[in-house]
Amino acid sequence: MMKYLAYIIAGCLSWPILAQAHYPVMDCQKNQADISCRIGFSDGTFAPGSEVVMYTYEDQVIARAVADGSSTAHFTWQEGDFYIQFDAGHEDPAEFDSAELE
Image 1 (cartoon, rainbow, N blue to C red):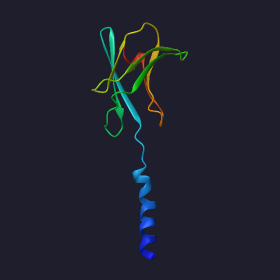
Image 2: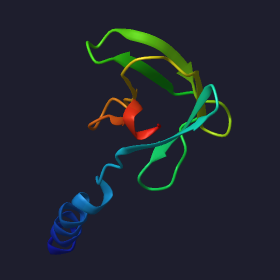
Image 3: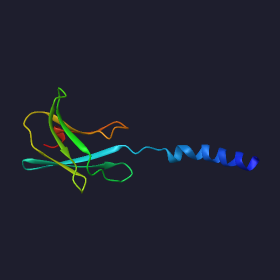
């Protein structure tokens, strides 16, 4: 019985290590008239197939893109102020402001 209790205690103590979440990350670059955003997670894994959304400051959707096989989403440059968001759904979303691209 004590042996099982020791396993249960060890499992409970190690749970926080196993349950650590990895937050979303994003790095965007302006390439003439286009924007490329590489997305992934803080543990270094990528997020191909995930949606990335461009918003106005009034939170209206301007454009949506799906990350390709290299975990990169592509947008056409928009005039005016905007931000780009990668929301993985389980942590705070990663955001990139248009001012950071100019």
